[in-house]
Structures are given as C-alpha cells and as structure tokens.
Image (cartoon, rainbow, N blue to C red; front, top):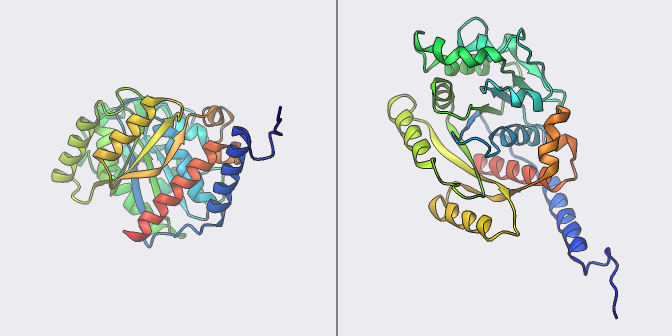
Length: 297
C-alpha cells in the first residue's frame, strides 16, 4: 500500500497549497497600473447578502495595498463598510450624512483607515437612515453626492485614484445619488439560486439614470461572489452570468470563506486580517483585473 505525505504534491491539500502559492506569487509580482484620473465606482445590488460591502472594502484595501490612493464612501445607514475599515461611526461622528445635507464637505468628514497608508473612508452613521426623507425636499437632490465628490477630487493635494461608493440594498434616493456620482457600476452577484433575480430591475434603473441624470454611467464590472466549486449550482450560475455579460464579468471568482466573514468583526478587511487566505488572494486578483481593465479603457 502506497502512502503519500500531505506535502509531496500528490494529495488534494498539497495541490491546493501549491496553487495558492503560485497565484500569490503571480499577483504579488504584478504592478497595478494607476488610472490617469479618478475612477468613481458605485457598488450596487438591491438584493441583500450578496457580498456588496465585503466586495467594496476588500477591493479598496487590495488596491490601496498596491499603492493606489483609495476613498470609500459608506452610503449604507448600517455602516458596515465603516466598521470593516476600522473608522469611527458613532451617531455623533461627522459623516456622509452631513455631506449629503450640505452641512460639511467630504474633506471635513473623511477619516484615514488604519488598514493601509492610502486608504480613506467617509463613514456612515445612523442619521443616514432618515436622509432619504430629508433629500426629497432638497434642491438638486440627486446631485448632492456628485457635487461633493467632484469638489473633493478637485481640491485633493494627493491625486485620488479610486472612489468606491457602498450603497444600501435598495433603489432609493441614496442609491440614485451614488449612481449620479459615479461613472462605473460594479455589481456583485452571489453564485446561488435566484442569483439573477432582480438584476433586470437594477439594470433598468441604471439605464434610467444614464438617460436622464448621468450619461457617463455604465456597468463596467460584475463580480461573482460566494462561489463553492463543489456544487453544480454555483458552476451553472457562473456559466449563466458569463453568457449574459461576457464583457463585464471578471475572471476571478470570490470563494465562500470563513475568513472573509470573520474579518469585519475585528474591524478589518480580509486583506489585512488574513493576507494568506484564499479569500484575500481572490480579492487581490479581482483588484488586479479591475486595475488592468481601467488601464486599457
């Protein structure tokens, strides 16, 4: 009877470790090209639980780790992106709410994330929950965030390369503000049953924004999340989404991962929480794809 050491390359575990090592070396060796002007990307999906906030903070952290100057705007009243980036967002903290209602500029409320040197966050507080109602009566209510972002980018001493806007899981006025402020939309889609449900509604909303409020807006990126290679369903979802959106879907798949889920409870992204994990590696690879696509565009 032949026995194999788990490290001799002949077992599934050894092959997986070797594959992760190879991929890590490849991504570490890559130079992420920096865009010539700021790319403003709204991360949106009105379905909850698709990995929207997780995707926002981990892509932002991955790009900042590779030298980009990155700003995350937390537009979700739950403030989960603020938590994951380790920034203060108690009720009294100056936040994106103050920016939206015109009481502060982004420069006055932005915080540096302890995660990486060039990673910054505009936090969300509970006050944002009532902002939808307050926005209704404000002048240029759909343009409030865009005006603030444009001012911040124009006055920044250090050029900003990426702005990621994390949306609430709805299609209300906050999300409309995010669409109007951005040039690109990134849609995370989970590799599960009903993955494409509601997507047509989201795409219709984006088309309406493009037609009436922001002609520069486009869906540039679709990222498949919560992928489990062991299930036929996940592989079928991947095939379906790639068939429908061949240009927008990234090659990288984000796996289901305990480490990705754990990281926010420590006020961290998985990029810093467990840099060697498959989840961290996948987000680094996805960030590299986004950076390369921007360089080509």
